[in-house]
Image (cartoon, rainbow, N blue to C red):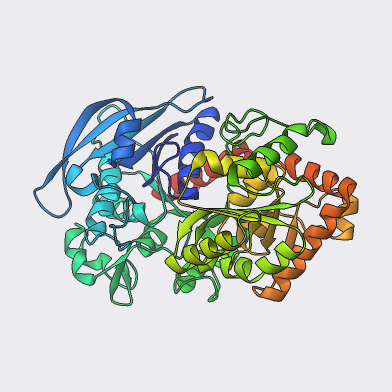
Length: 495
């Protein structure tokens, strides 16, 4: 099949979260499975700089009027990949050439023209489905998250007009971010009036790109089976649970995977020494990674101190107030904390204050550094992901692969990927981490105590760590599931 992946970001060119990792890995997995997969990206500076051999393909008119934009094509070379990814890039400097965060201005407010910036992404996908590039026309358009949410809407109305027979798939990576804008922005979208309706993009009087994708796509997916069930409930549906229940028959939860070319402790060049665990051996490299990391971060160089790591957006959704509240207990037990992330100002300041008060036990790095992230997983003993909700979560998967046992709340993809260290699961060899249920301090701190207790039992710790590192997390399995969804979308489109 000819499959067009539509995303606002893609690793290694541009990354603000897990969406980029999926957008970079899935096309490669599809290509390895014999599919003809390409990507469509907005022309952010980092993307233009990273796509090789960019050449003009066509020009097209914006949905809001006579403004013209260019479409270019090139190649994205991924280390270790058998072949580069063919990428289409929208050439629109007035919309995309802005410094810093691709979605927000310097005051961390969404850009006022985001509706145009990301309508253009969906519009370009629909134009490709109607022959914009005479040399290649997708059979399926796979749109990722709200930024690409209008692609299924544009395709729906193009199909009604007989202009294409392309199928559409829409993936929810995080339902909390919905691309909502003012109702008067609908006039810029180039959609017929009936699209701004309860059965369409209208959401409490506003325009919702997320709802457009959910309503108009032929097939829906999200990034874990548990999250697929959760978003159909009022607690996790963010006001869209009714629509999701209505469309539950075309919704599939497909668990994200880990790109072994990028996240592999045996070959990771960011680590001072690689390591792997055939039957629990060859782990000396992890001990060295921990010692070097402790020295690098100014922490006390203590091999006996369990090192807890946090690599996260700093938001309350991630349960970081639980980490702050439990930090005294963590330090009293002799643990250390190393954090990398950015987000809400009060959380950034609170963690900075804790690091300043105990610099030999707490390290805080505000921002994002891909190399340091790899080093944290390489040297860490426990990866903290105590989220209120978590569609899939890649952080805990990196922790599993690098032998940094995840401590997570039983929700979304965390529930699907981490097995608690119960006596039964320890005995069966399934245990891979620490899981708590209630989103409160008491349950979180009980999980902390269980992590400390296991750490003191070195043979048990090594056994669980081996279980974690051997857990399968391959993209080939996920790609096969997506291919089946694409076939279903083609059937729905009548192709």
